[in-house]
Image (cartoon, rainbow, N blue to C red):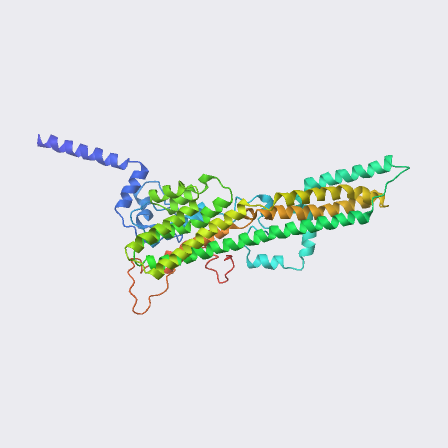
Length: 459
């Protein structure tokens, strides 16, 4: 009887072992992680991963640990290492492309082409300032992005020029009316003046938008620095939670200004805000950038009531939060308000009238058909090109390199937490991760960030 009972116990134990081994991989991974600490180590490719994650392949047959960083799912206790790791996952996986995939090809051009929609390096400036640029522009004229944009207008102008020359040659034998070029020259003066004013206005909008986006990096970096200096020593969890919100500000503002789909930032928000309540709150808001500012002020009010911040610290933090709120309003104003359409329509009508009268006027003044066509096409290229440039820059958020600048903003926020200065004499710093080295906390740095020449730090 005892031997039968012993065999039954062994059989049940064997079935239990088999069932535990055949658990789904996600459950077995969670079991393995729960028995390992969440300290950070550097694997063979220089990526921060949990110690338990490094040994997952040893627990699972035929499963190899991935070289790509994975976002942390533990939202109960946040650390600098987890924050750094999630920033690395965003910059290298979710937003790992070098150039913005949302910018149209006619603005970006080829990967090797110079464009305002990219952040420039030292090699780009050397190539741009080369004295060979005139020959380069002439050789690449057929592939010009501007030429492709105005090709329909140029084709219509060419067709009208050929038709007008043919009509004058075949139907106007006895009487050829004269169109004074001096009168047409007066009209061209007004057209050039209107086009110049419109182009200057568009360039001014582009410059204003670019300055505002520089302030995005400035204010997010300042906010993160203040949080790391004033709030992190008092409440690490609230400080890291705010740091995660601030790191998303640039991406959320970019999505808001670029007319992106609502689900464009869902995964990004879920990774950087592991707490489901925080992520759901941000994603449910009409203006997600305002939700970030609201969260900052909520924490400031909470810490102020608890007397954990001085009045000066509260004022400094609130002033920077106000600066972030101003950026939302000012960038929204540029996006929502174009150059007055009455001015644009009047310029376009006058331009069409001038180019309509130009071919017959030139041909009736004594120029042959070929010369008339060449002069008309050159004038059309100059005026259509200037008008198209003003339209492209009128909506500046289509051409500004917000993708790279959002990356820089996120890196600046993370640096404010991970690149802390040495301890001052007499300063007491209670930090659980004080023993971690600089490289272990900045795994999100790229090779360009660690190069000897600060080449790719456009802000």
